[in-house]
Image 1: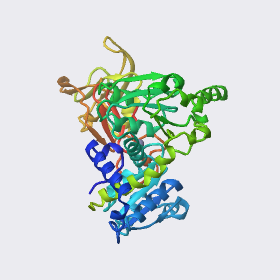
Image 2: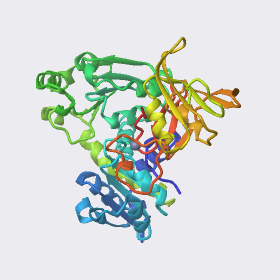
Image 3: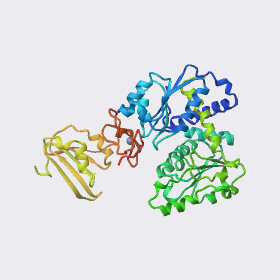
Image 4: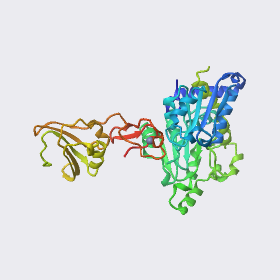
Length: 304
Length: 138
Ligand SMILES: [Zn+2]
């Protein structure tokens, strides 16, 4: 039995397999309508995240399965002080697979140690969010055809943005990848991430503070939010925030087939005028999340 | 007890300066009945300043784990006033229920009844990370 706690729990080959399944689901949804008949997915959301939860539930329903669960801690046994381990042990008696979101880092790993069924980490605080990374990877693959020889720009908060770290780690396993790390000095990629996944693997990369300058060379631009609470003073925040907003003017400098991704929700880091640009892939990305989650459920339930 | 002469016991030498008290508590030396001396900011050729702990008693302590705290530590075992053995601490691959994660967002800060586990990630710099939240232990 397998769990998905960290994206690196899966090999590159396994991720390729998931992407192949998800691609087939998009092409032939009817083939998959009964695959999980009589199976149940429990969504244990100890903190609310409506989009992620609905994506999981829609995924299970499209596979013909059923869903149960809760969407916030106050309506669950956690409010009465039950441990994560106990909740997992009990729910694994009711469901065939569990998607769990929890504000505490490492909670899904604790659940996995006590569960008789596969656990999917649907986000543990600011720690991991592997199904977001799967969604990112699937979108890049769908839009670009492969991961080979891509120049991937990551922009915004590269220090605290864990989805960025997971994406770097996952992409670093493919050949011909190049990274352009675009962030203010204060929010650069932590050195352990850079050393482990970029430098030690000999992957070419560039670090810059200018989104404008980086635009022309990118095949993929992954935008993230620069959050106010990361800065000591308002002045710095406002100055930096504005230089990392994606606008139609910046898009003019980009390649014709470049794509823009964003884990959503966005605040103002992508101007709404960019939405109608065909290169804006972030809404397609959100939709892709359902398909890759379907592929993931099939894999973990060992349904073929 | 003269701090320089131990008959039967253990000397923990070359402790990174300022960390002796932490080790004293981690090894629960406040609960032993034999004499224990803590020397801090002792001049050292190798380290500039170092701490030393001398334990005048043949105790069985989880000494191997000390590398996690301060990899520079040397363990000196004394028998009948003579040095019987001198060795460097090793770096265990995994440490269970010895360190506690200090990250307030970590599940170990609230969940009862789970093991506190750290694993070695950077051999050179002895970096230990919590297996649950990946926070670096320091
Ligand atoms: Zn921790």
